[in-house]
Length: 113
Length: 112
Image (cartoon, rainbow over the protein chains, first blue to last red):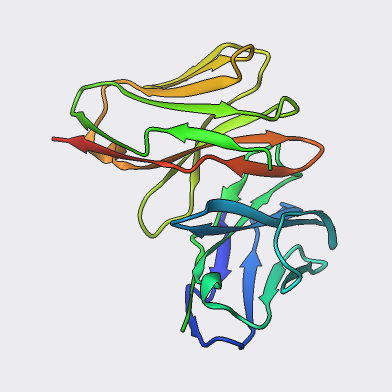
């Protein structure tokens, strides 16, 4: 069974731009969560989607948004990029949520200049 | 914010030794405590997990010890190997919230 895939793997943007990251979960998994990983703040939860609905959201500004499609694939969008948004963005999938094993993708490394 | 505090930040162990990483949590609603292992350039991978109704869980060389009253749990890696060199994250989760709160990570180096 293929793992979680994320595209693109690397991305360079400038301040003020917007970016869209994509995540394809493991086949059959309906829950997709997004995390931001930085050296200073560690791994922080962004949001979680299940059956195209956002079920939970972390403490991030409204510039961070996401969506999930009917095939469980998910995208996250960051608008008006700031330097501090430079991070590794990780997607994790599970059949249904935090009490089950979450399988992480390799991440998308975003650099904001 | 309900935190998970992890220590030490870095750990150096000789091959064959025991690596011990500790975590403390605040949120008594947590009902799931996983440990993740992350290699450079990779996403975290689940190593072992425990629920609060047991005090210890062992899988191969990896053991979680859990102390509910102290709100602490730890990862023990027996017979540590150079291939275990990675960053380890503890986390707490609760089913209703469907999210994980991670510790700050421990960079483990096992010397050959």
